[in-house]
Image (cartoon, protein in one colour):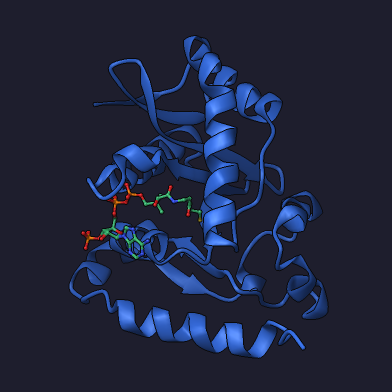
Length: 204
Ligand SMILES: CC(C)(COP(=O)(O)OP(=O)(O)OC[C@H]1O[C@@H](n2cnc3c(N)ncnc32)[C@H](O)[C@@H]1OP(=O)(O)O)[C@@H](O)C(=O)NCCC(=O)NCCS
């Protein structure tokens, strides 16, 4: 398995990347925004993405976005093809893209928002800490990216203060301390359930 910085030779995978994101969003039903092949191709050609390939077959992907004049970086659109899940690939991709983001944007704060327990766990182990949305970018364009998520009405209702997603910020200075704490997935599972109960309108 190759996990590498994407380049123009990988543009041919843009369609399958989008298709895999779309199918996964349908299955999971929440918290995944859709992307177009044009957007993914652009990320690939500007060297702002990491791709995993096994024998020419698409296995996984993640890309970098910058906000607030490059003062914030997000590693977004993480996707692992169903054929390659539960083998530690997402973890490898996230580690690689975090290192690459630090190299490419050394002065930026790196953050993510997600509802996915796998991603919360990976981020936590990489040194991210849960934060309120007020710690994240105020760049309108970033939050507009949530429009295709089915929970966008929650974000609007709370005036962007909170949503089903948890915000996580990477601070390299805290990495050592965090390693000594055990990740507790039950806490985050409970938090997710509480948020769902609070924010999602019950169907009549
Ligand atoms: C989420 C996703 C990226 C995980 O990819 P993966 O390669 O299977 O993940 P990994 O094998 O690296 O697993 C990392 C950790 O998360 C855990 N994990 C994986 N899938 C999980 C799930 N659905 N729920 C809870 N934990 C999960 C693994 O057990 C592993 O923990 P461990 O280190 O204790 O073994 C993949 O399932 C996917 O592409 N899903 C659809 C898209 C998506 O949800 N993207 C994230 C948007 S924020």
